Image (cartoon, rainbow, N blue to C red; front, side, top):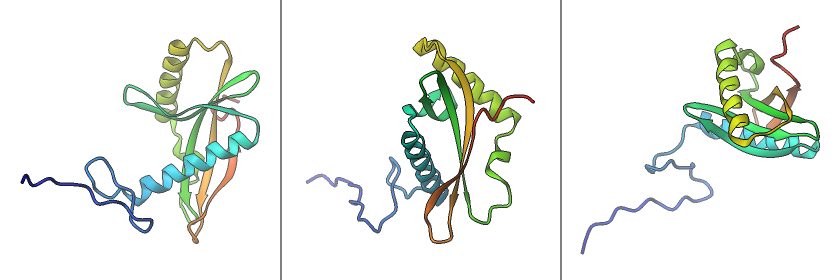
Length: 144
């Protein structure tokens, strides 16, 4: 008989695995949990989430949502409770540029006529491991 390698079946206590069967880094798992919390947060406030983890080449938008009159591109930043850098400070000019390029690609592909804006949702992982949305910065990239 052939020797066939199989992935172990994850148990509730085991860590999530990637395609190669390796455990995902804790930061990836935390980030993903933060994105899901942000999605739920938006939905409870009447947003329709159109896409999660939208890719345009090597660029990614965490969430794309819609209100009655706006297309909203959302960057989710998840940090530990005692993080030294504020989540919104991690969305620097280069990151904003990449988000803008990916958003333009999305708008061209979908022909969405709504006016767009860019929001940041800040998520915190507490010392107890809970994930909570701490801030929603609307129109975060608008110049003053």
